[in-house]
Image 1 (cartoon, rainbow, N blue to C red):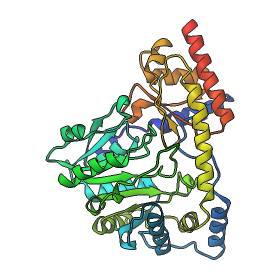
Image 2 (cartoon, rainbow, N blue to C red; image 1 turned 90 degrees about the vertical axis):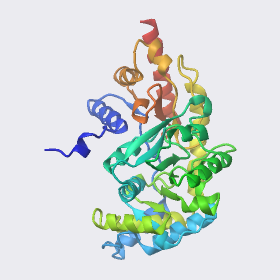
Image 3 (cartoon, rainbow, N blue to C red; image 1 turned 180 degrees about the vertical axis):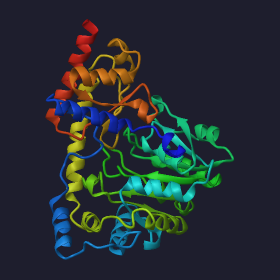
Image 4 (tube, one colour; image 1 turned 45 degrees about the horizontal axis):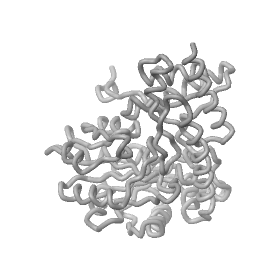
Length: 394
């Protein structure tokens, strides 16, 4: 009875571990969940107030399928302010979250058999969305010694006559790594030369630490900008994951096609959430920096503690709010033959929920979110250490 496209999907590893952690909590266990991909802060008060005002003023009706013009203007102003990029309203679509923007984009540009280059590790939904659009994900393996970044040589080896697009995610989920301007320039020029569409997922752009800064590949040259579709949203930057507002910006023909698709799927993003997003971009931005500083403090503390654990090594990330340690040796020391089983054992015995890296195309790693309090993070690391100690002494 099911369509082939659905039968071929791989279940989300993130949602699976979250569901199991929830079940254990419902059974009365004290579970520390570090699988969440969302800020633990509430949406800023000024945004909440604007949403309330919109409801009271009756802005609860349908909006244009591609989003409110006033929100498109706010997004355009954000691009001018942050990246010195100019996009007209016709080059922007507002979607029901950045995930929906990606999904709609793949549906709009991919034909059967088109190949999309996806560096590993990758966010879990990239390959599944490509497959749903009839495309073929082609994975470019990256390595820890190169900070999980692709190189021109690895790009050259992956490109075929069927290559249509590449997905870049900087800062990265799950690794937290960031491409430098020089690295992006090389990738951008290569894609222009080979007519490869660049899909730049920049959802974590505001969460960058230490001396690093986010660079949008579209700001490097006009030729690269023409070849790029930027995906972004307010979920991570303004703690608005549940509001489901994301967007895409780029070639107006692609944006027009995406808007047509949206008109037959979602009709429009939620009106109230759109008015909230207008305030997110036009209102006070100081809270964005406050959250970034809080995440950086957590990172600096929890990273130093985690790497003291036997068998765990980890590159220190430069952005987002994840650690992506290599735990393959830890799994072996604890008597498990795979990291997936180690993660499962950690949840069963220590009641700490991590996400296995296999769901991100990296079977030797696990993802740990530090989007929770320092107290919870400290308790989690202590449990991980005790778990390892008990397993190694068993």
